[in-house]
Image (cartoon, rainbow, N blue to C red; front, side, top):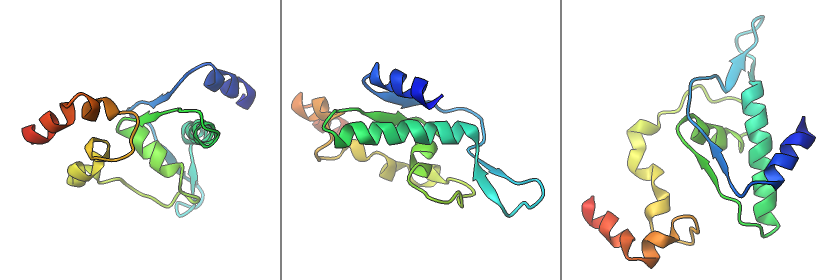
Length: 123
């Protein structure tokens, strides 16, 4: 239930949405043009929404999505499920925004310890 999920989210300090093989968007059997979010996607969106609320309230609550989990995060910001596929492998360098200079808290230790420059030099 949503209450149980809220309790879990209140007892952890971050959210990991893993990769895997399931459908985030389904099509209606009677009309293949009608798309809707799977239960897995709806629960993931609910968790992402809670994480956003926590961050807006000033609670640092990182969200990490790997492969399918990253797609789930992206779809959490889309009102209608109108995406058919993700072609991120064609744009891998643009997916690594967390390594760039910026206000990102999760990977700030790279910059603080001089590790960021090592990563940049290895490219």
